[in-house]
Amino acid sequence: MHSRVLRYFDEVVRRGSIRKAAEYLHVAPTAVNRQILDLEAELGAPLFERISNRLRLTPLGEMVLAHVRQTLREHEALRERIEDFKGARRGHIGIAATTGLAASLMPSLVHDFRQRYPGITVRVIDMPVAEIALAVERGEMDLGLCYDLPLPKTLRVLAASEWQIGAVVPPGHALAKHSSVLLSECVGYPLILPAPPLSIRTLLDAAFARNAIEVTPVAESTSMALIQRLVAMGSGIALLNPLDVMEECSRNALLYLPLRDPELQRQALVLMARSKGQLSAAAELMAQSIEAALARMFAAI
Image 1 (cartoon, one colour):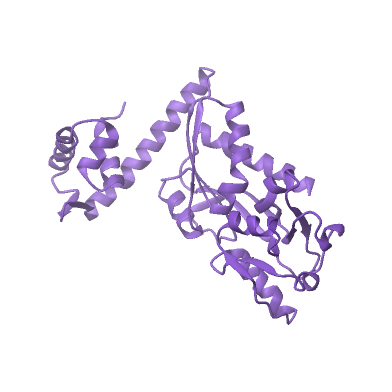
Image 2 (cartoon, helix red, strand yellow):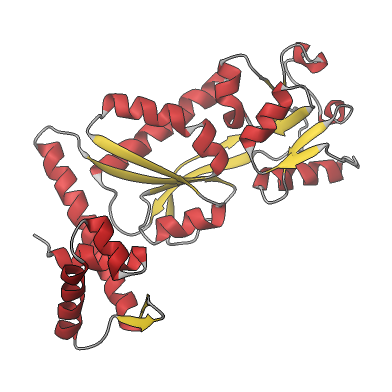
């Protein structure tokens, strides 16, 4: 239904060169180049500027790219709806998530989803928060999952929830006998904190300032895996939300104790998609699965 030129053009843009696009598509570079030249001839203007062996889109190329990607998305959605009609759940899903969510939340979600829909392949890419929004907005990813992001009008919220920050301690720690703790009770122990680039650190720093608490962490990191490992080794305690440590807590390797300070702001988790266009059947199923899983987890805390 759609010419191969659409796929060829899209891959050339993604890969940055005709050679790399051809390698990815498993076709000859001359075949890709001929399709691009034919398209430029049909439109009567160049789609790329060829600079130092790199291809850069012209203004016309940017317009064509937006149309091509929208057409490819609609074509994929149509194919998946046809498969749904035939009783087969098939398709591909791209999800952009923060590194912490990709490591902690997504493994169990993807596993459960694949058990239910083995015909659907799932691609999860970890990105910084700002890049997640751009990837979804551009149509490079179907869904985005991150914390504390003001959404532009080009994106819409599919699900949202707020998660309480808590102390994360190893079993046997002095605080482990409590069901919840205060921030002031935590600062007497070595603190391992998320590094300032993470949104949770902004919330923690604001809480420390409101309580006139001066904090010098013994370690900081953007890696949740590193923070979890240091806590498990007894280097200190961390301040995270329950989704960051759900796997470790399920194995009783770590304990999560919610902070009961009333002024401490919660982390707002958002599942997003593009405002324009319709989600594919596969992406819609994944969005519903994520929303249902988050509701179950929230109720269990």
